[in-house]
Amino acid sequence: MPIRAAVTGLLLLLLTIASELSAAESAYTTLNFDDSSCRQIGDAPTEEDISLGVVRLLCPGHRDYPVEYNSGDERTSVHYGDPSTATTESVWESFSPFNSVADKFEWRIENGVPFAAIHRFMISTGEEEPAPGTARGPVKGQVLVVSKVGQPGQPSGCVVGLVDALANPDANELARKIADELARGFQCGRDKAVYHGKRGDKSADLQTNFRQ
Image (cartoon, rainbow, N blue to C red; front, top):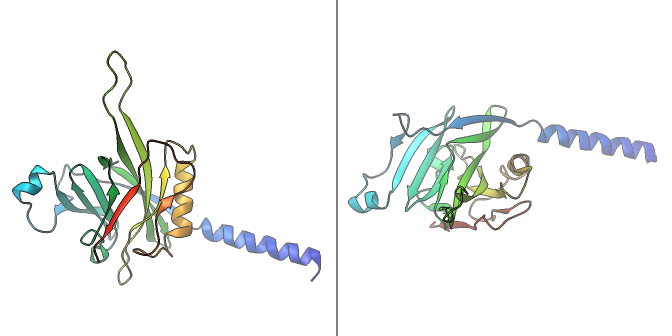
């Protein structure tokens, strides 16, 4: 094959791959616990649940893809997509330190179907209170958690990758790249979610408890 033809073929292949990767779009939604848009699911909380701050809610997401929010003992696990594929009955994915999530998060969508969600988790570092005599604000880690969205009739969604938002100036772009390249083919319960890019000392390991 002539060199020029080979180079042209390679360029066309790269353009095709770039086009496929850039086909995904973003949409943004907000978790709002202050109105009736979220509803409690599962059994009614016991007194012990209430003392531990156990909350299990199903909230609106993107179109017909809801968000299942679970919180207990100041730690949060979230599932995105078809409730019938929810991992939260059998899987808890969160961080050992106390944590919470931002109210706004991003969906990655292709052909109208969301296949991944990107959500910012705020991680306790044990330095929430400023030192005496200083004006320094709370010190928390920030991790972008990239999750596969559960689809009807398909395996459950789960976390597919992590980005330390404080250690990477391009954290949002990196999270989108992980979503676009890994989420659809990720095997929940078999593949392991890892950090991508740089990782600083304010991040934390993901704790996944599959009880299947």
